[in-house]
Length: 178
Length: 163
Image 1 (tube, rainbow over the protein chains, first blue to last red):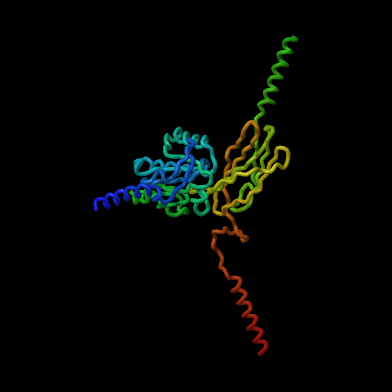
Image 2: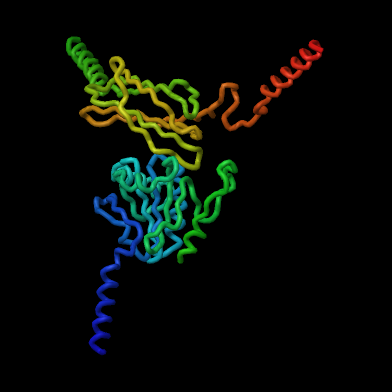
């Protein structure tokens, strides 16, 4: 009886270790601006916001200011942000973009920036393939939210055009997962 | 006097050679029509001067929907149509875009010369009646109704004559 219990206990231990990564619902890999390969499943247990963008897209530039609000509102154990460039722009261009935010707006875009070779964007782009496109993956890698177009963390500017419809707020979506 | 002449000539030669070596690259870009319409075609012409040994001239086109989003960029080679003149005929892809942005890049062995990024507002598409596609004026079937009324009157008068 004791032997059976021990065997069962060990089996449970082994199986839980084997399925640790396979329970992550979605996975993809990309190269960050330092040239390292990163996989989404590395962030298992955290909320991950994936932001598809490119440097000359002005709505994407504004989106960065909203992502900064999010990044500063949650701990790194709770949430991570990945901004994936979809236009084949170089690491140098992206670094210049980040530096410009620091110098001109005193805003440090200090989350993960990566470059997609088209593989991830082809799988995740929505509707007409506009950017910014945001995804929120929950702690198990399941897609919790996706939206094409500018989204706000919480407050919406007064001059948001009515013609764009109800603005998207991300705070309730994030809070739902915590 | 001779020395002055030599110095003067030398200065002139230096100035001339400076202008020749460091002539400023220039790319003039025009878009036709100057007030492009969303979803319709545009013709982009780039006149390139003072850049030698050009290997490629590329146009990067972005269509955006105001402050809300931008669509995927198009980055294509322009066709050489004359010495220093390049051309591209492009069909704008998004009927709901409101802003067109474009930039030209010229490649040679020295590197890449990039123009600034230009932007122009896009006019809304119109249908043949001059109404925009977002309009809903007019009554569908109005012409049919008139035709039915006219035919009914003609039929009534014909029968009256027959009686």
